[in-house]
Length: 320
Ligand SMILES: [Zn+2]
Ligand SMILES: [Zn+2]
Image 1 (cartoon, rainbow, N blue to C red):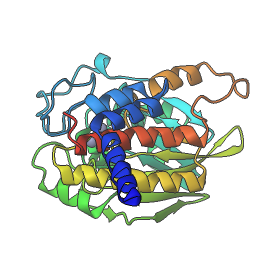
Image 2 (cartoon, helix red, strand yellow):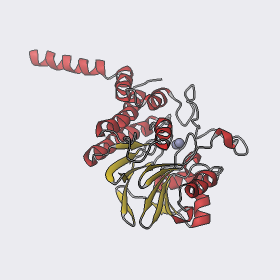
Image 3 (cartoon, rainbow, N blue to C red):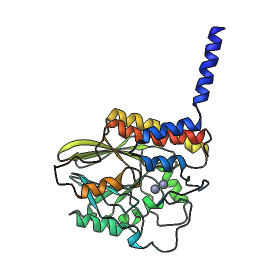
Image 4 (cartoon, rainbow, N blue to C red):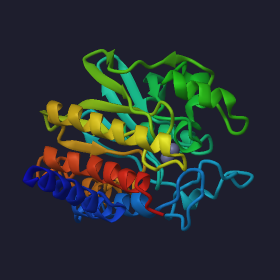
Protein backbone atom coordinates (compact mmCIF):
# COMPACT_ATOMS: atom_id res chain seq x y z
CA UNK A 1 0.00 0.00 0.00
CA UNK A 2 2.79 2.38 0.98
CA UNK A 3 4.69 1.45 -2.13
CA UNK A 4 1.64 2.05 -4.30
CA UNK A 5 0.97 5.39 -2.67
CA UNK A 6 4.60 6.37 -3.07
CA UNK A 7 4.50 5.46 -6.72
CA UNK A 8 1.29 7.35 -7.20
CA UNK A 9 2.85 10.42 -5.58
CA UNK A 10 5.96 10.11 -7.69
CA UNK A 11 3.92 9.83 -10.85
CA UNK A 12 1.70 12.77 -9.98
CA UNK A 13 4.72 14.91 -9.04
CA UNK A 14 6.30 14.11 -12.39
CA UNK A 15 3.09 14.93 -14.17
CA UNK A 16 2.81 18.22 -12.30
CA UNK A 17 6.30 19.21 -13.43
CA UNK A 18 5.91 18.15 -17.03
CA UNK A 19 4.04 21.20 -18.19
CA UNK A 20 4.83 23.63 -20.98
CA UNK A 21 5.39 26.29 -18.32
CA UNK A 22 8.00 24.16 -16.53
CA UNK A 23 9.94 23.67 -19.77
CA UNK A 24 9.69 27.34 -20.72
CA UNK A 25 11.03 28.17 -17.26
CA UNK A 26 13.90 25.71 -17.79
CA UNK A 27 14.64 27.32 -21.15
CA UNK A 28 14.62 30.77 -19.56
CA UNK A 29 17.08 29.65 -16.90
CA UNK A 30 19.38 28.09 -19.49
CA UNK A 31 19.18 31.25 -21.60
CA UNK A 32 20.24 33.48 -18.70
CA UNK A 33 21.64 36.77 -19.92
CA UNK A 34 23.38 35.15 -22.85
CA UNK A 35 20.69 33.73 -25.11
CA UNK A 36 17.61 35.91 -24.55
CA UNK A 37 16.99 36.40 -28.29
CA UNK A 38 17.18 32.68 -28.88
CA UNK A 39 14.80 32.05 -25.97
CA UNK A 40 12.26 34.59 -27.18
CA UNK A 41 12.32 33.27 -30.72
CA UNK A 42 12.33 29.58 -29.94
CA UNK A 43 9.72 29.65 -27.15
CA UNK A 44 7.48 32.45 -28.46
CA UNK A 45 8.37 33.06 -32.10
CA UNK A 46 6.57 31.81 -35.18
CA UNK A 47 7.24 28.43 -36.70
CA UNK A 48 8.33 28.37 -40.34
CA UNK A 49 4.73 27.55 -41.18
CA UNK A 50 3.77 30.91 -39.79
CA UNK A 51 0.88 29.50 -37.77
CA UNK A 52 1.85 31.41 -34.66
CA UNK A 53 1.58 35.09 -33.86
CA UNK A 54 4.27 37.81 -33.72
CA UNK A 55 7.41 37.61 -35.81
CA UNK A 56 10.83 38.23 -34.32
CA UNK A 57 12.59 41.11 -36.05
CA UNK A 58 14.69 40.16 -39.03
CA UNK A 59 13.42 36.62 -39.12
CA UNK A 60 12.16 35.38 -42.43
CA UNK A 61 9.26 33.01 -42.58
CA UNK A 62 10.29 30.19 -44.82
CA UNK A 63 6.90 29.92 -46.42
CA UNK A 64 6.35 33.64 -46.87
CA UNK A 65 6.98 34.86 -50.42
CA UNK A 66 9.79 37.40 -50.64
CA UNK A 67 9.16 40.88 -51.93
CA UNK A 68 10.01 41.11 -55.61
CA UNK A 69 13.56 42.34 -56.13
CA UNK A 70 16.34 42.41 -53.56
CA UNK A 71 15.97 44.58 -50.45
CA UNK A 72 17.97 47.78 -50.26
CA UNK A 73 21.63 47.13 -49.41
CA UNK A 74 21.53 49.59 -46.52
CA UNK A 75 19.02 47.32 -44.75
CA UNK A 76 21.26 44.25 -44.72
CA UNK A 77 24.92 44.99 -45.38
CA UNK A 78 27.43 44.08 -42.65
CA UNK A 79 31.22 44.33 -42.65
CA UNK A 80 33.27 41.11 -42.71
CA UNK A 81 35.12 40.22 -39.49
CA UNK A 82 38.04 37.93 -38.74
CA UNK A 83 36.85 35.93 -35.71
CA UNK A 84 39.58 33.32 -35.18
CA UNK A 85 42.93 32.59 -36.84
CA UNK A 86 41.07 30.35 -39.31
CA UNK A 87 37.41 31.48 -39.05
CA UNK A 88 35.77 34.52 -40.59
CA UNK A 89 32.30 36.08 -40.48
CA UNK A 90 31.11 37.00 -43.98
CA UNK A 91 27.41 37.37 -43.35
CA UNK A 92 24.90 40.17 -43.54
CA UNK A 93 23.28 41.91 -40.58
CA UNK A 94 20.89 39.06 -39.68
CA UNK A 95 22.40 35.96 -41.34
CA UNK A 96 25.83 34.40 -41.09
CA UNK A 97 28.33 32.86 -43.43
CA UNK A 98 31.23 31.33 -41.56
CA UNK A 99 34.37 30.74 -43.61
CA UNK A 100 37.06 28.32 -42.47
CA UNK A 101 40.47 28.69 -44.03
CA UNK A 102 42.63 25.58 -44.43
CA UNK A 103 45.98 24.75 -46.01
CA UNK A 104 44.15 23.64 -49.17
CA UNK A 105 41.39 26.21 -49.57
CA UNK A 106 38.27 27.52 -47.88
CA UNK A 107 35.06 25.93 -46.60
CA UNK A 108 32.01 28.13 -46.12
CA UNK A 109 29.13 27.26 -43.82
CA UNK A 110 25.96 28.59 -45.44
CA UNK A 111 25.79 31.03 -48.33
CA UNK A 112 23.17 33.70 -47.41
CA UNK A 113 20.93 35.08 -50.16
CA UNK A 114 21.46 35.24 -53.90
CA UNK A 115 21.34 39.06 -53.69
CA UNK A 116 24.00 39.37 -50.99
CA UNK A 117 26.54 36.61 -51.67
CA UNK A 118 28.71 38.72 -53.99
CA UNK A 119 28.78 41.75 -51.73
CA UNK A 120 29.35 39.88 -48.49
CA UNK A 121 31.22 36.69 -49.37
CA UNK A 122 33.19 37.60 -52.49
CA UNK A 123 33.92 41.25 -51.68
CA UNK A 124 34.19 40.48 -47.95
CA UNK A 125 36.89 37.90 -48.58
CA UNK A 126 38.79 40.36 -50.73
CA UNK A 127 38.67 42.94 -47.92
CA UNK A 128 40.14 40.40 -45.51
CA UNK A 129 42.85 39.24 -47.90
CA UNK A 130 41.10 36.03 -48.95
CA UNK A 131 39.98 34.87 -52.39
CA UNK A 132 36.51 33.46 -53.04
CA UNK A 133 38.00 31.40 -55.87
CA UNK A 134 39.52 29.25 -53.09
CA UNK A 135 36.08 28.18 -51.75
CA UNK A 136 36.16 24.42 -52.26
CA UNK A 137 33.06 23.47 -50.26
CA UNK A 138 29.86 25.16 -49.15
CA UNK A 139 28.07 23.26 -46.41
CA UNK A 140 24.45 24.39 -46.55
CA UNK A 141 22.86 23.77 -43.16
CA UNK A 142 19.37 23.56 -44.64
CA UNK A 143 17.39 24.62 -47.71
CA UNK A 144 15.99 28.00 -46.75
CA UNK A 145 16.86 30.99 -48.95
CA UNK A 146 18.68 32.84 -46.14
CA UNK A 147 21.22 29.97 -46.18
CA UNK A 148 21.17 28.37 -49.64
CA UNK A 149 20.46 31.43 -51.82
CA UNK A 150 24.11 32.14 -52.63
CA UNK A 151 25.14 28.52 -53.26
CA UNK A 152 24.40 28.55 -56.97
CA UNK A 153 26.56 31.62 -57.50
CA UNK A 154 29.49 29.87 -55.81
CA UNK A 155 28.90 26.71 -57.84
CA UNK A 156 28.81 28.62 -61.12
CA UNK A 157 31.68 31.01 -60.50
CA UNK A 158 34.18 28.99 -58.50
CA UNK A 159 33.18 25.36 -58.94
CA UNK A 160 32.41 25.19 -55.23
CA UNK A 161 31.06 21.78 -54.23
CA UNK A 162 27.79 22.18 -52.34
CA UNK A 163 27.04 19.80 -49.46
CA UNK A 164 23.57 19.20 -48.01
CA UNK A 165 21.83 16.22 -46.45
CA UNK A 166 19.92 13.91 -48.83
CA UNK A 167 16.60 14.71 -47.12
CA UNK A 168 17.19 18.42 -47.53
CA UNK A 169 18.30 18.07 -51.17
CA UNK A 170 14.91 16.41 -51.68
CA UNK A 171 13.20 19.41 -50.07
CA UNK A 172 15.16 21.75 -52.30
CA UNK A 173 14.34 19.72 -55.41
CA UNK A 174 10.64 20.22 -54.65
CA UNK A 175 10.99 23.96 -54.06
CA UNK A 176 9.72 25.96 -57.00
CA UNK A 177 10.85 29.48 -56.11
CA UNK A 178 14.18 31.17 -55.48
CA UNK A 179 17.71 30.52 -56.70
CA UNK A 180 18.73 26.91 -56.11
CA UNK A 181 22.10 25.19 -56.35
CA UNK A 182 22.35 22.11 -58.55
CA UNK A 183 22.12 18.91 -56.52
CA UNK A 184 25.65 17.94 -55.50
CA UNK A 185 27.28 16.20 -52.52
CA UNK A 186 25.03 14.37 -50.03
CA UNK A 187 26.24 14.61 -46.44
CA UNK A 188 26.15 11.58 -44.18
CA UNK A 189 25.68 11.60 -40.43
CA UNK A 190 29.02 11.83 -38.63
CA UNK A 191 30.82 12.58 -41.88
CA UNK A 192 34.35 13.94 -41.58
CA UNK A 193 35.04 16.60 -44.17
CA UNK A 194 38.78 17.11 -44.52
CA UNK A 195 40.35 19.90 -46.54
CA UNK A 196 44.12 20.20 -46.15
CA UNK A 197 44.99 20.45 -42.46
CA UNK A 198 41.39 20.84 -41.20
CA UNK A 199 38.63 18.32 -40.53
CA UNK A 200 35.05 19.29 -39.78
CA UNK A 201 32.46 16.81 -38.54
CA UNK A 202 28.92 16.97 -39.91
CA UNK A 203 25.88 15.67 -38.06
CA UNK A 204 22.39 15.31 -39.45
CA UNK A 205 20.07 16.87 -36.91
CA UNK A 206 16.50 16.77 -38.23
CA UNK A 207 13.90 19.10 -36.80
CA UNK A 208 14.04 22.57 -38.31
CA UNK A 209 14.13 20.77 -41.67
CA UNK A 210 14.15 17.01 -42.40
CA UNK A 211 17.95 16.92 -42.67
CA UNK A 212 19.46 20.01 -41.02
CA UNK A 213 23.25 19.78 -40.75
CA UNK A 214 25.01 20.80 -37.53
CA UNK A 215 28.78 21.03 -37.60
CA UNK A 216 31.74 20.75 -35.24
CA UNK A 217 34.66 22.94 -36.27
CA UNK A 218 38.22 23.13 -34.90
CA UNK A 219 39.46 26.73 -34.68
CA UNK A 220 42.52 28.52 -33.30
CA UNK A 221 42.60 31.76 -31.36
CA UNK A 222 46.09 33.28 -31.46
CA UNK A 223 47.43 29.78 -31.97
CA UNK A 224 45.41 28.12 -29.17
CA UNK A 225 43.03 25.36 -30.33
CA UNK A 226 39.32 25.62 -29.53
CA UNK A 227 36.25 23.79 -30.77
CA UNK A 228 33.14 25.42 -32.21
CA UNK A 229 29.70 23.84 -32.51
CA UNK A 230 27.30 25.23 -35.10
CA UNK A 231 23.62 24.40 -34.55
CA UNK A 232 22.20 24.36 -38.06
CA UNK A 233 18.56 25.24 -37.52
CA UNK A 234 16.60 27.18 -34.91
CA UNK A 235 12.85 27.49 -35.19
CA UNK A 236 10.09 24.92 -34.91
CA UNK A 237 7.58 23.66 -37.44
CA UNK A 238 3.85 23.35 -36.78
CA UNK A 239 3.78 19.55 -36.94
CA UNK A 240 4.49 17.67 -33.73
CA UNK A 241 6.54 14.92 -35.38
CA UNK A 242 9.19 17.36 -36.59
CA UNK A 243 9.33 19.01 -33.16
CA UNK A 244 9.87 15.59 -31.56
CA UNK A 245 12.70 15.02 -34.03
CA UNK A 246 14.07 18.43 -33.08
CA UNK A 247 14.17 17.43 -29.40
CA UNK A 248 15.96 14.17 -30.19
CA UNK A 249 18.48 15.99 -32.38
CA UNK A 250 19.16 18.66 -29.77
CA UNK A 251 19.70 16.03 -27.10
CA UNK A 252 21.98 14.00 -29.31
CA UNK A 253 24.03 17.00 -30.46
CA UNK A 254 24.33 18.11 -26.82
CA UNK A 255 25.90 14.76 -26.01
CA UNK A 256 28.34 15.12 -28.91
CA UNK A 257 29.22 18.67 -27.95
CA UNK A 258 29.68 17.74 -24.30
CA UNK A 259 31.96 14.83 -25.12
CA UNK A 260 33.96 16.86 -27.63
CA UNK A 261 34.32 19.72 -25.15
CA UNK A 262 33.20 22.44 -27.55
CA UNK A 263 33.74 25.90 -26.07
CA UNK A 264 32.22 28.04 -28.84
CA UNK A 265 28.61 28.08 -30.03
CA UNK A 266 27.79 29.42 -33.46
CA UNK A 267 24.49 29.95 -35.23
CA UNK A 268 23.63 31.04 -38.74
CA UNK A 269 21.50 33.95 -37.51
CA UNK A 270 23.40 36.76 -35.83
CA UNK A 271 20.69 37.26 -33.21
CA UNK A 272 21.03 33.89 -31.58
CA UNK A 273 24.73 33.27 -30.94
CA UNK A 274 25.48 36.80 -29.68
CA UNK A 275 27.17 37.72 -32.95
CA UNK A 276 25.48 41.13 -32.88
CA UNK A 277 27.38 41.78 -29.65
CA UNK A 278 30.53 39.76 -30.29
CA UNK A 279 31.37 40.93 -33.82
CA UNK A 280 31.58 44.64 -32.96
CA UNK A 281 33.74 43.72 -29.94
CA UNK A 282 36.08 41.69 -32.14
CA UNK A 283 36.33 44.40 -34.74
CA UNK A 284 37.86 46.60 -32.03
CA UNK A 285 39.98 43.89 -30.40
CA UNK A 286 43.70 44.43 -30.49
CA UNK A 287 45.42 41.11 -31.25
CA UNK A 288 46.22 39.15 -28.12
CA UNK A 289 44.98 41.89 -25.81
CA UNK A 290 41.53 40.78 -24.67
CA UNK A 291 39.68 37.46 -24.57
CA UNK A 292 37.73 36.41 -27.64
CA UNK A 293 34.05 36.83 -26.68
CA UNK A 294 33.07 33.73 -28.68
CA UNK A 295 35.09 31.49 -26.36
CA UNK A 296 32.86 30.36 -23.50
CA UNK A 297 32.66 27.37 -21.19
CA UNK A 298 31.28 24.09 -22.49
CA UNK A 299 28.34 24.58 -20.10
CA UNK A 300 27.31 27.69 -22.02
CA UNK A 301 27.42 25.88 -25.33
CA UNK A 302 25.14 23.27 -23.77
CA UNK A 303 22.87 26.01 -22.42
CA UNK A 304 22.26 27.24 -25.96
CA UNK A 305 21.14 23.78 -27.02
CA UNK A 306 19.10 23.44 -23.83
CA UNK A 307 17.11 26.56 -24.71
CA UNK A 308 16.38 25.15 -28.16
CA UNK A 309 15.38 21.77 -26.70
CA UNK A 310 13.27 22.98 -23.76
CA UNK A 311 11.22 25.37 -25.91
CA UNK A 312 10.61 22.47 -28.31
CA UNK A 313 9.47 20.26 -25.42
CA UNK A 314 7.13 23.01 -24.23
CA UNK A 315 5.66 23.10 -27.72
CA UNK A 316 5.06 19.37 -27.82
CA UNK A 317 3.33 19.62 -24.44
CA UNK A 318 0.98 22.22 -25.82
CA UNK A 319 2.55 25.65 -25.42
CA UNK A 320 0.70 28.02 -27.73
ZN1 LIG B 1 15.63 27.95 -41.71
ZN1 LIG C 1 17.55 30.87 -41.24
